[in-house]
Amino acid sequence: MVVLNRIYTRTGDDGTTALGTGERRPKYDLRIGAYGTVDETNAAIGIVRLHLADARQLDAMLGLIQNDLFDLGADLAVPQRDGKAERLRILASQVERLERDIDTLNAQLAPLTSFVLPGGTPAAAHLHLARTICRRAERVMVELATQPDEPVSDAAIQYMNRLSDFLFVASRSVNNNGAGDVLWVPGQNRQV
Image 1 (cartoon, rainbow, N blue to C red):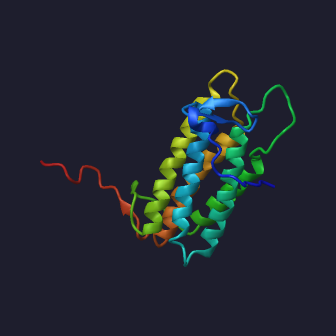
Image 2 (cartoon, rainbow, N blue to C red):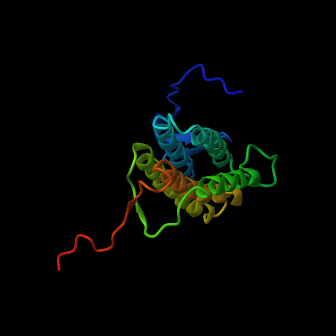
């Protein structure tokens, strides 16, 4: 159980922050950027949920995802090193649940005939924003994983990859199962 009695500690006033291991890192550190961008994804999903009064199934899925993203932040905040005891980690079963949810939502959608522009309903537009933030988090995590002594689990990267797919399919779902999608028309605004 987490207990936060005091919100400000002043320990970050020097431009550093602590990992879950207690190690201090600069706030611009790639690992801090990775879990910070995961947190940003979570916040964007919170905004989406404000627009889902009539989409209880999707809202429930997003609630599970928000909790998973806190798990993922904890996973990134405590890098696994030297075979030490496992901490909270993203599991393959969480990735598999996302895949099942994607399949559930996608089964109701017509096939795409063009790329989709971010838009349609407010929920869809916010889902697209969450998707792009999620993709950025994934890129930071992949970059972090290439650094020496900066482990990132395969399941964590897979989770973010699937999540961006989920957010795309969810955006089509709340756009009247794709009927309200705003489609890209290549070259539409070019002068001939």
